[in-house]
Length: 353
Image (cartoon, rainbow, N blue to C red; front, top):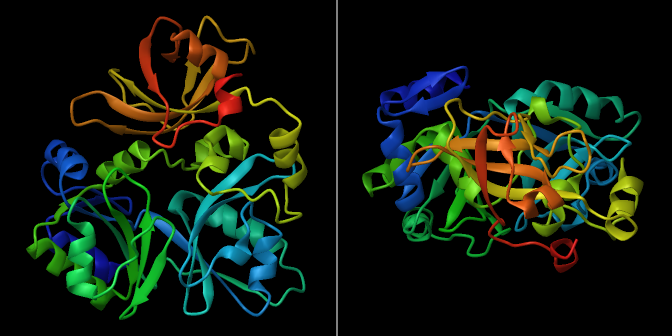
């Protein structure tokens, strides 16, 4: 975390550990505020890779699942980076700023992902750099979010997937039950904007509250413990604009395309709740007496504490096990999961599987 930005957040009352804001004094109240009100959430726990150079777009086009040609200064997108076997190594939010591509991902995956991407640059005219400490970034969410940004920035993206740069601040509209934005900009500009939004009623919340909103929106994340655990369709990436089946070749493309057109998807991602003594972690195993694979019924993708108690999760689960209604965190008979579809639903052919 940039030291200047960290000092600013600490002045706002933030408790920070290992580069992540834990809370501002009342974690439970912050969870409720994130779900019901207007909130500000620092995103320094995410890193940025910048790809620049005249061949940057072409290079990324051959690496990521989405059609990079569709990204622009007015459109951002999700996309995953896969192994040759089609398993996700990382998942990015890709946007453009200052004529360069920026890839936002968890800081815990920055080093291995950047190293692997750089291995394939070869003679391409592209520079890949860690730009994490060059920009501040935070999320604004809530019923008044759009009006607040209009007040302070003059213009705002109105549809999910739209982006806009105003006065050096890049705004990304992202999915959620209420308007949600990711904002990137210089530290001075972002401090001023944060303070103005706070003065107008947006409440700072910790990283856990931000994860909760991503979970409620059905947005997956790849963490170190889930690297190579899922193909993109298992985390519903094709349902949220994260995979292009028309773009042509990229690493892992044959496996991903075969799954879409010739295979039968046996696992998909669900929204879940569990009351357990220990916080669920990405990669935790799920079990079911109705699992057909004999290799466990699924895995936790992400988890966050819920305002009403317990934990809300995104989980990849065998469809047959999920349909049975018996899925447990850990051993069979342990903490039972309550499952529902993500807010965008499932593909009809999946529902019939």
